[in-house]
Amino acid sequence: MKKVFAVILAAVLLLTCVAACAEGKTYKVGICNYVDDASLNQIVENIQNQLAAIGTERGVTFEIEYDNCNADANVMNQIVANFIANGVDLMVGVATPVAINMQAATEDNQIPVVFAAVSDPVAAGLVKSLEAPGANITGTSDYLDTAAVFNLIFAVNPEANLIGLLYDVGQDASTTPIAAAKTLLEAKGVSYKEYTGSNLSEVILAADAAVADGCAAVFTPTDNTIMTAELSIYETLAEGKVPHYTGADSFALNGAFLGYGVDYANLGVETANMVATVLLDGKNPAETPVMTFDNGTATVNTETAEALGLDYDKLVETLSPYCTKVQAIKTSEYFE
Image (cartoon, rainbow, N blue to C red; front, top):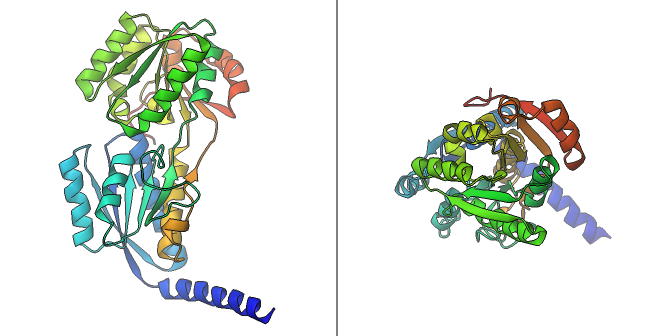
């Protein structure tokens, strides 16, 4: 019994020492964003705001070094190299490609990495499991429940007979949900067609093709390439009477008919909290479970719904049995 008490006391003293030693210190945190879009920018903003609040509360300073690689692999390499050269205490990788880059760059130096908005960290090879990452990396996941999105599609249009799958084949975030969508549609006996694009021009052409082919609806997961193009395609889809169902509320903010998935503002806050537990509380990323979210919120763009000839109040009735909440949004470039 005395030994058990001694072990517990030692652990308490260690945590107390870690917290006390942290007070008054400055921690360098390097944050790299993958691309400039509403979802990822919202995450970065909330990481920065939450770290500032934690710093005030805990009596420490988080010195943030922020950059955006704009989906350029060479720029990303340079940003991460700069973080290491500048002696950051921890790196935050926003989106899967950045997290993968940071993981490779820290194999030898073991700088802690906290990722944000990685849809499938296990499949991406970032962690061994969600419960026990197993290396110097952990973070938050915006895993998408693909079946839940399709419940919404068929609730609105039970007769939908051709679904367009719009995505970028180079986006890791799209791999698992697109595969799940195909399996689900095949099981239901519903036809689908794939429309892909890796840049704005290709995505615009893909959206045009989906309308020309008479798709009953288009599905896009949390794909950053399509997200950055949404403001350029939403009118085409709406005018063609093709509702666009997507994996994040930011798509709906940028004009898509409906976004379903995680609250990216909250994901940013929780990512910052995870950074604090690693730097201030001495938590080991290898033993810190990846955080997943499921808020079950369907965000409907009321302007797009009107263009599609759909009544918002009736949509709330139709969608409510399949999600926790239905909320309205209007088209804008950025969240307020």
